[in-house]
Length: 345
Image (cartoon, rainbow, N blue to C red; front, side, top):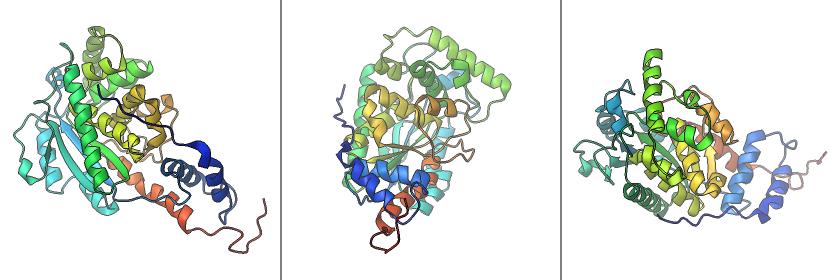
């Protein structure tokens, strides 16, 4: 498996960053989370004057074999239909990308459809959807490794385009099911607390989904390693996101984390390389059951709580202006000495 060389940010600059933040013309700590973000971004970029350039939203799409077991209210064909909608600019993520200046990158990770690649979708397909993990592994270890490679190459591509801040999104009917199992097996939180309504299941549907996932976990015959759990229960688009995240951290990029699926992807990524979390900013706490629990288990604090549960990268992009504000604070606020203001603390 590819070995990512990710380093924790060098802490030698921390004192200087804190000193700069504390000497801006404001009461100490009065800009709260903006100050926390500025410190984190300054450490990532190893500078007292951080910058954000060419933000991208990379959206990986794939189908899931577990949908055959009736775990989703949405039919499987929504995956490719929504991918077409992204191409035509009519989806939720499209208006947010336009509003906040993100370039949208669409990647076929394994959609069960003949997609029009000539219209701008990048072909990284590993197969026509995963297999049902109720019956065995969703993907082979070789397929998982290929997904990691593809995800890393997409990050290389956007980094070469000048991007230093990236959000990752997904499209894949049924992908809250693998996310719930990853969450359960990688945190120890009870499966029942990890399983939610997804795209709109009623209470009976949620109970059926839970029963299918419980049977799947009971039948798991892997070795219990993070790599094996990721492959056995994952989706192609989810594993590509892991590869993209790990490569972004390796390149010292800022990673904006979206909703329930992407939070579980960076959870899984952190089980392979814990250093990745130093590069992550969590955009929001979504409305999917379990999202708050997994955020709490990771001891991270999302910027927003807007009741979102769309995915696609939408919550991460909504949070981006807050990140911009933290960087503008560092670069545009005056300090007490230069502004001839008495420092009173």
